[in-house]
Length: 133
Image 1 (cartoon, rainbow, N blue to C red):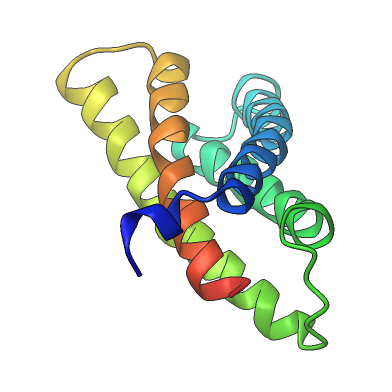
Image 2 (cartoon, rainbow, N blue to C red):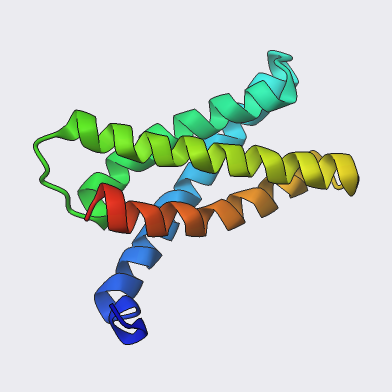
């Protein structure tokens, strides 16, 4: 596969849709994280994980139907792949948050935003070529 094939119109449109779904997931993620951390008083990394997992689940459903138009009858396997990629992304996400908050003393939510943006590229590429291929 050469570079022009990677960046064709259909691929770019899928990326845009993936980002829109992800953007809605940011509200789910940040909302759940905020509620867990600030109101329920769950530890910040656990709260982050709960928010991330909830958003990953809603994002899977939206990406399956809208972004990738998947008709794979093995929904359990497809969801497992998607969620595994999300868990790896969560690890990357937590590492970035830890580095930015711990080492660089950046605000937790700013760090979370930076981590979310970086992990978006990971999630899209791996899902496009593994989960929904």
